[in-house]
Image 1 (cartoon, rainbow, N blue to C red):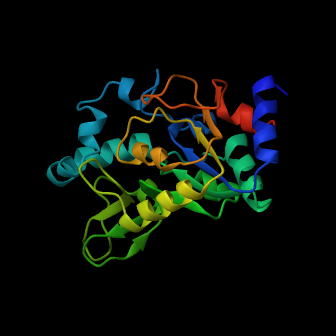
Image 2: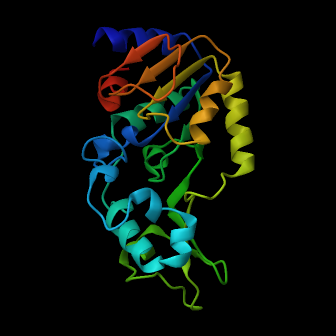
Length: 238
């Protein structure tokens, strides 16, 4: 066990009120590309910048290009939970971790066995017809050609939060409450660039803040423990 992992283990062992706030870096070890690191989606060539394609106005005005990008880059069949997802699920079962608050839309936390997951930006596993409201699953979207259509003829929209769309208010309130009450907060796999989600970490009132990220984050956080090793490798040692 590395020295940093040992320090993290001491914090985890001493608490039964832990919150985890995670981003894309939690899933990169599962083969899901992130947005801003080298090799991430923002560094790959595309007709439009990803932040433009993943906006509500672009979805409305150019659904064909939106779904071409969505299908090619955001649907990753076969992705499996890595050691980070699995360890967090184990900590929840042990009564230590109260919730995972994630910016990811891949559903890997639930696949690993986590039950208390706040998906701030939605999920690729939930899709609804904009005309009749019928639910459609991941496989439906994966095999849809072009703009996905329901049997009623309506467009099937992913239940993901696009740029220009607001976050679910109840979920935000739940996240704030959990962060305010947490004894230990572990922030992992996120550069804390995307707002309003990134601003939630400031509601943490405790004094045991752990930051696990390969690169520096966009905010000046007074972390008690900073780990730059891969998050799966780190959490997998607990």
